[in-house]
Length: 448
Ligand code: HAM
Figure (cartoon, helix red, strand yellow):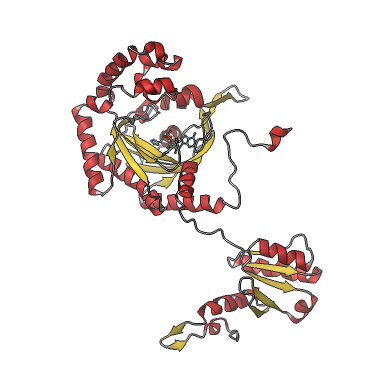
């Protein structure tokens, strides 16, 4: 029984009291994406298992150890997406986006699933905001993509994030590098974990991001990829750095970054923070010029990044970044008795139609209980309606913060509400040296 009252290990609820923070971040990201020419794409949460095996790579930790894979009732092997790129490429091809004007820029926001050991900033269900750009080989695209990610952090007011970049080359120069890695790791073969022993032949680069402590210790002294880049990759990397400088984006070259997914070529990058513990990589991405072809499309250079929403939130909290306040109800109608309730129904309906958050007590409790409830909800204004107020079609609107009360007509409630709330804000307003008679706008008597 205890199981049904506990969320599955590594998963987390986002609660109503905090949800405005998520909504704020998400809408800011989509807005910035729009400014960089990225349009949102929504792809399914699960895909054919093969897509990830082929796309992410079957020697990666993600595919070998972390995927939520199961057979559906029709016997198909499906996998909850561990990341967003493979699905975005599949959708790009399947829906013919590849035939539209290139580059095509898409972004997405949604849950991903990896069976990893949970810890601060590492969950089994987490959320990514990602962006993918298809159809450009230009180093300018790499720099623009990085500037897009940086714009998000800047506009959210995050400091203390360092940008680390690297180039991991193309299949041509990678072959040389693989040879050097094989040689290096062969001399440590008896200490490597079983998975890495298997990787030694198939994909020695993946040993570099094995999470086993022994393998990662050995990997520290392994040859670095930047020493093996071909001329074209070296030039590309140089040009990316020139553009980053032109955009005044600070970075360091970290030749150890190889990323944990197989599809990367040339530029890779990470935004790393020192304030949130071991899982400090908030955002990661890079170029993947071979993936579209690998998944059945034309040879199409592409690149992208994804950032982890939970890590971003941790970081914002660690740095005491200000979030906008949760929206408080504009009005709470305290209704006493059946007639008053019917009146309250009308009032909240009109108020809501005009864009206000207006509430009343569904439980129709006592006056005291309703006021207490309004207080707990942090309502900005309340109005008490009983039989007498219904009869006179007038009541008192109370400012819950100052205690100030003003008479409000019940049959013209919305304009009365504007009149009182806005005119109190505009009391001191003078236009051309004269007091502004705000009430004239609504044809109502200005409050005294
Ligand atoms: P990734 O580095 O595997 O790259 O993940 C991107 C981000 O997702 C990480 O930097 C981190 O913030 C977050 N993340 C990853 N795993 C977890 C986890 N278990 N718990 C919490 N957050 C996590 C990708 O997924 C690539 N698809 C990025 C990309 C897009 N590359 C090109 N296009």
